[in-house]
Amino acid sequence: MDTLNLGDVPEEGVLMGRPSKYSPEFREQAVELVRATGKTVAEIARDLSINDTTLGNWVKADAAERGVPDSSGLLPLTAAERAELTKLRRENAKLKVEREILKKAAAFFVTESTR
Image (cartoon, rainbow, N blue to C red; front, top):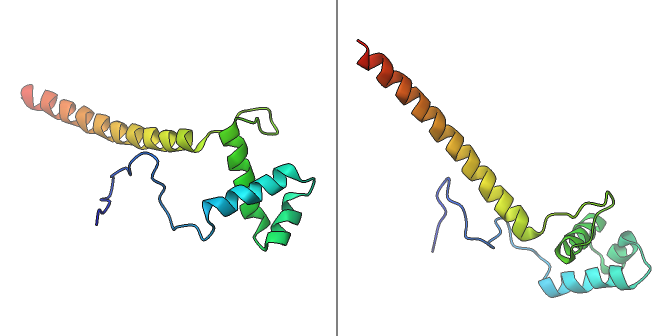
């Protein structure tokens, strides 16, 4: 079994967290019900006996994947873009720490060489 060490980044496309209790097919069908009918997310969620926030999140994610602008007119990030952004933020934080270490090392060697 593969384990993740602290600081490791999972492979691209691998989502962390607990597995969903809803199958991908169920999610797709629920989202399609919202898109195809004139019912609200809350009505569909109530009919399917799921949380309306959960269904709303699925609908938002589907819209992002299809490239539909949100209410502000901006295109939301796709799942792949969110994963890349997270990876880049981690890498940026790591590089900042490394840069600080190198600054301190350079300052140390400058003071040592002038003695």
